[in-house]
Length: 88
Image (cartoon, rainbow, N blue to C red):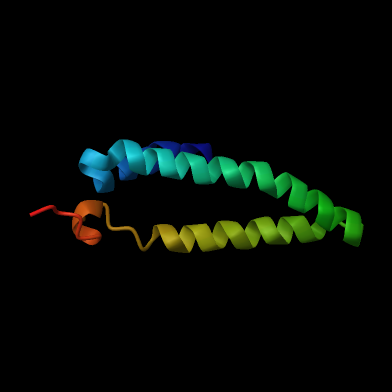
């Protein structure tokens, strides 16, 4: 998974343009939120089910969803254009 980190940051720069810091910060914040919440959620799942299989299934499903969402990003199209943020 760490081999893709450079791509994540490059996409933030590509789609963010002048808002690259904001896009990078949002990606980092949401990722850290997930990193803080998932261990608690996984612990609760293991406590209730007694099995580590279910947390791995949840993690696998989340990774597949994330992979599919990444395919929807067009790094050649600016976020400013996508959200029509041009102040004209």
